[in-house]
Image (spheres, rainbow, N blue to C red):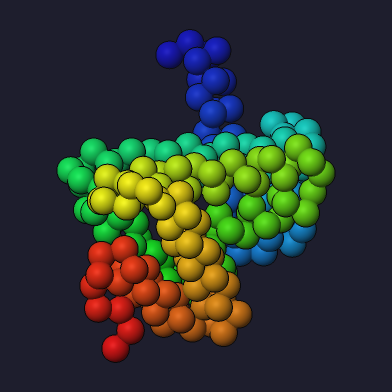
Length: 198
């Protein structure tokens, strides 16, 4: 392996470690609560490494947003590929919300937290915040339509996202994952006619 290739690999590993650390800390503490020093410590790097690869806080925030966007697009595409139909794809989304309820109760919704923090920023950042939700709204609407909700799929997608975000906020505020799971039960009932709350 050439020296240039080794240096490129080292750079890629460092940048990935920084973005992974920032993503986790932004989720746990919010944008304002995660200092560059804390990001460096979580990534096991010197603070200067963070500043070298991401010279501004905005550039690091952008990298985390793009990383979340990439992760969610890949996850949604994987659900589409394995589900076979809209109903099954939506079921995978609801299963994911159930599985994340304990983490959400501790730290809040990672996408919702980042989007809210970005929405408090300038106009450009507000657009970035909206993009994260627009991706999910489009996916929900498409799979609702495929499940038979052809006329009101966009409105129902907004209602599902509102239930998910509201459930996440309640679970986090009360530190109670069951508040999230109850909202997921309502989402299943409203989408599939399944039994919701007992």
